[in-house]
Length: 131
Image (cartoon, rainbow, N blue to C red):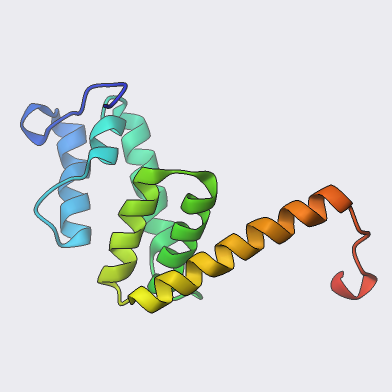
């Protein structure tokens, strides 16, 4: 259950509808997901976050599938169920297979384990690692 009201398209004001329309157009879908509907309680926040998503997740030096998989990895690590589901669906749409997802989760699990060990044991950083 959301902690704030979901703002549906029909009840949204013009600034929110403009962002919703851009989300649907950009993503090639006919609906707006609940994350955006809760952010719409603050139209400025909605617009800012959507602009950042469009900028960061656009094709660049990293392939869009790689970006989605990174998003899945961070979301799983941070325990964000909503983002894990959302970005797993987006990654699958961009070509991520079950085998790729399982391998990604294996890397995430290993990285989390070894990060905790390194943080706890505090080995000095090898000078060869520093540029």
